[in-house]
Amino acid sequence: MLVLALALYLSRDIDEERADATSELSSQSKPSAYMHNSRFTIYDDNGEATHIKSSETRYFREQDLVTIVSPSITYKNTNGDLTELNAKQGKYLALSQELVLLGNVVVTQQNVSNESWVLKGQEIHYNNASHIITSSKAVQLEMGENRITSTGISASIDDKKISLLSNVRARYVYNNI
Image 1 (cartoon, rainbow, N blue to C red):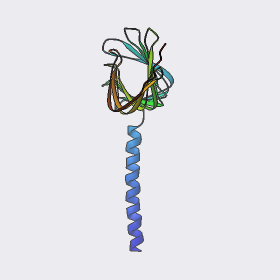
Image 2 (spheres, rainbow, N blue to C red; image 1 turned 90 degrees about the horizontal axis):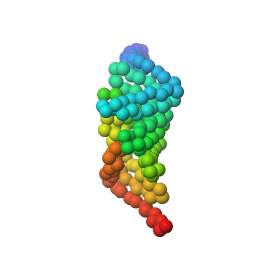
Image 3 (cartoon, one colour; image 1 turned 90 degrees about the vertical axis):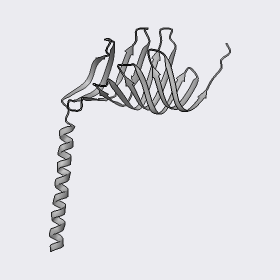
Image 4 (cartoon, rainbow, N blue to C red; image 1 turned 60 degrees about the vertical axis):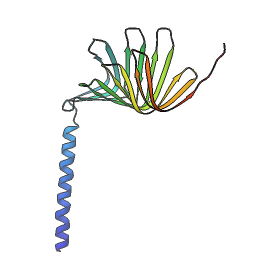
């Protein structure tokens, strides 16, 4: 009987701890705002606009965090180069102006001469203030039929400078026209 009473007492304490943790998590995870099929624009310090479309957007005031489902992001720099970023989900940290894109991320940039490159990965960060794309994960860069893979990248959209961080492999296709 004593063992049964002790088991019930311990079970009650564990259930209370779970309930406390669950209520703490749910109070933290309640969004301050929710949008469905939304479009919004964020601006960098120079007033340049980045447009974001999503199927669902939630704003969490306490964390200054915006979660985005199926984000589609476009940015056109002063040279007229159009950059598009798409992913399964994303997070926007407003204070640092950092967009974290997760799941089948595809970044495409097309310049005014109609030349383009495509960057693919599972996690890519985009800083809206500096217009720099970074990742510490595996990425693949495509330019026409040429392919470069690496672990990690840092790419400046405005300056058109790309640094591949490690494990770089390339396939180059030469077209003698």
